[in-house]
Length: 401
Image (tube, rainbow, N blue to C red; front, side):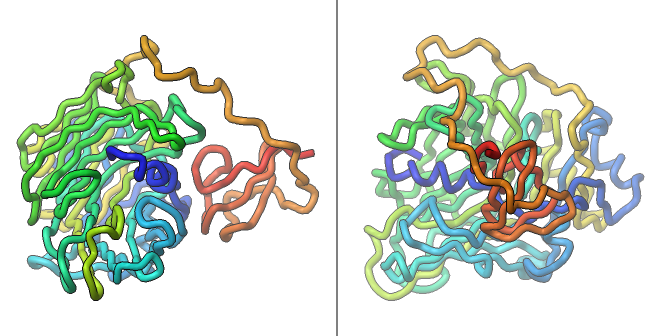
């Protein structure tokens, strides 16, 4: 993400969404524990895995939400200002004899006529370990004229609380631009590890590696996060190895993140006429917490799970009592670009008198308020079981007066 046009993207892509249910915090499995032990090593058993083969009929499936997924429907960036993020742009269909998740984005060349899509986990619980996913990228639209600056992605992220937030964390497994963009004129794929950024004026602090070739078709993306190091593989080939940005800041994640896929237009500058529709598909996703797994072994584990007819498994340890394989660098950057504030800007006291106390089991709709730990909170979108102050589902309106 290489220009100021990504500034708003950082903020909005970091808005993590909201369908967290208590069921998503617990272990759910479609097969026996015997199959689970054969699919994961003892090193990962204490921390667990997340595996999803995306065997859902629609985003309306109760299992889709219970398994921690959400189809974005809230406004904002990244991408074309004024464009819509449509939950209906996420669907599930048969491809190659298996069920896959499909993301859709379309544009007629206007902001009002542009739609994006994002599929995302609602909980911040991903950091150290190995990520693997099989994604189908496309070079041409499913219909309409070609040439748009479209971005096909897979990534993890946390919210940015303020400029140069030292806890901000983001790992872009792939950002594939089949028609270029951000100054590129041909197909390019970015692997980017973030330290932080400032929105205005734009200043992105990150390590990034670009591969300039077509990535059309199915690909296995594997990312290893261990020993203060982030390694990105495509089809078993190491494409990027990141530790620090060009100013010496560690790009190793500093807090738990959410797992996301999205499909969006960088701009409309390259659109010609008519309406263009683009698609991106995800076959499966796999995460082994606090374990370094080779690309071949990660794909093999997924094959074992699928061979046992396991459509979904979540054995991640909530809170975690396992020891990470690494200790991220703790030495502060030697040449920071600026000194970030030690605390977020303060806000005036809020009137909490009419707001009910937050409850774990209550469903909150966008705009509804509750009080919790002496502060007033407002739901950014539909949420349940997401504690204010711990996730991005809530906006902090300040201390109660």
